[in-house]
Image (cartoon, rainbow, N blue to C red; front, top):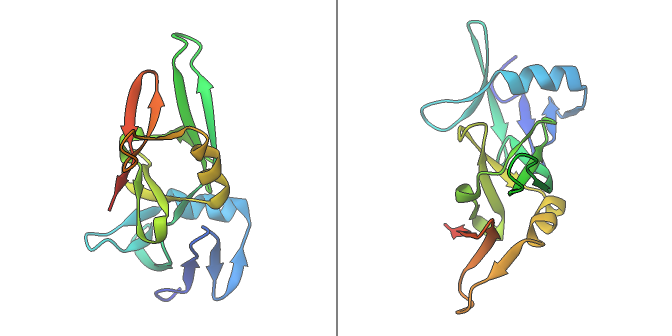
Amino acid sequence: MESSEIKIDKEGLWYYRGAHMFRKEILCILFEHLKIDECGKYLIELEEERYYLDVEDTAFVVAAVYKTKLPDDGRDRIDVILNDDSCEKLEMDSLHIGEDNVLYCRVKEGRFSARFSRKSYYQLAEFIEQSDNGNNFFINLNGEKYFINSN
């Protein structure tokens, strides 16, 4: 493979030489070996080989949002399903608004940024409140306010 033969569009869809990559077993391997280099470029590292990707926005996209109640203490938690089919706890402090009012968060132990899909944004919007002054937005979870930062 040459550099940039693999592209990830802003919706998180993968392409190889223009053909949509949809086979889960292949995508699973690619996600497993996905890294970001010291310059912030996405790449796949397999053995001694490095393959750079053309990523339109982020490699990870939040596909769905769920609020759950933890069985041990009854506290609420918000989980996200990512385009690699993984589920993880939403890191509330990592929520931020980027260009064109797109919502992002950090995933994979903070190693990657993830873009919210339109569907997942609307799912999360059910929990978003506006501050009294109307200038800030936050999510009130278990009595704590998590403000959504603007870049």
